[in-house]
Image (cartoon, rainbow, N blue to C red):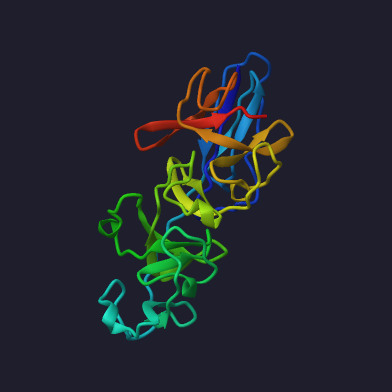
Length: 266
């Protein structure tokens, strides 16, 4: 029987490589371990095989220090001109009135100037996300944790934090899927919106970010391919389609109270 395993992509880890597999041999029982270290994408073992999952997390945080602030984050809109918003200037570390964009939360962005007021452009995943000070600011439907903002290299940016989306990986909501945004797992059973490369089912890949909405980059044998997430783990019939199975992950992965898995698409 096929054993499916997916390793999360943590916020501070490389998104460049899918998980490597260590098959046990035909008919063997799945035996998997979770260790700290560089994060990968995920894997699906061959017939009777098993895989090793590698995940890691790195402490996030840091206080800003750019001198007196011109405005207050999440403060009244009147503190800045109508075409500006209160945000962090990365170069100086100062909180000040800066260019305001029109992109709404969970939409794609390239710089913070693309996003509306009270939103920050997550430079690592290239998505506008709500600014926060703590979990109490991330209470709206579709919001998850309050985490440190990262630059494009995955390094924490002192002085600014944002909410994660707690998105649903099998269809991407509330990520702006029509704006090229998908849902990825950034830590075990933790999901967030990220820009998508748009590759379709069974396309070869090296990163979850290359796959279209509803898919993860999964290593199967010598190749890694985009395969669909599913939320009805067990024998077919399943949402994966006729004669296809939604395989459980090891360690088991959940979105809320629902276990999620991967379809054996190809």
